[in-house]
Image (cartoon, rainbow, N blue to C red):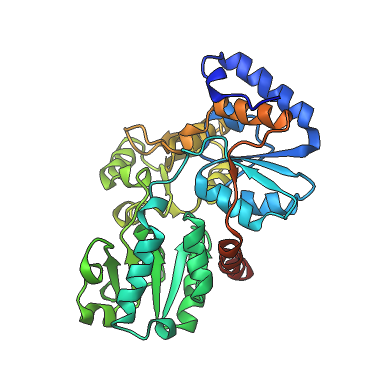
Length: 362
């Protein structure tokens, strides 16, 4: 039987898509494991066997090697990480290849290579700079860190990773999200005058040679478009309207928002903190809307608000929808693997080194 086209699924009703996904999943049995990222839309995550953030899901998939197929309902870099950590008998599928990440795209490997070359004209770069890449990044950037003595990090273990990196070398090149790096360094009490921002579109990142020599933390000019929507005025509004409300935000937010929050942490930290909070407490959450709406629906004994007055969804994550999921699952049930994510072996080896260094610190 030939591969089923995606166009066959675009006009199906929500109910029909739900029933067909359930039927395909049942027919596949232990041949497939469905992973759902915390930011995923409800019509997709309802089918997930496991929920979590990107690295947790990738690790869980690798631990469940009895499942030969992994359908990752997230974005491209997450599926790449799952492929890097998966066993040789596993294939990773991304239901829609257009599900990318704007922040991950803000640091291309060519730009990072150019940055490294520019730094090498000023410093003994291999001796004094440790590259640290956020796990929200492409596989080739993780491979770059593996090759150059670097490491990956998550929003929850960035402090431990940065401590490790500074214990080895004088400077850190942190990419692609400047806000996570800055917020962690601020919390560590790191001097602001020893941080610089590297703009890949400017010579020497827009910095003087003197500034590069002085800097201990080089932050890549990159950001998450969702988390940059939150503003200090949003925090002030909720504090005024709801005295005693607790503000919890993701560390990808701007430091002006983070500095006004009561708690800062990863998606898993946000979920656990709000879930374990006493009944009757009020929370305003600064992260992706699907996650906040799900918290609000599940934590009915508390008040849960979304920090921004605007809709802040991860638009690329939102591309994974029921039609694409149904298409991928039914093709798999008929023996067709669509949208397989496969990291080249040379990149996979180096990227895994960077990931394993991080996991050893966690």
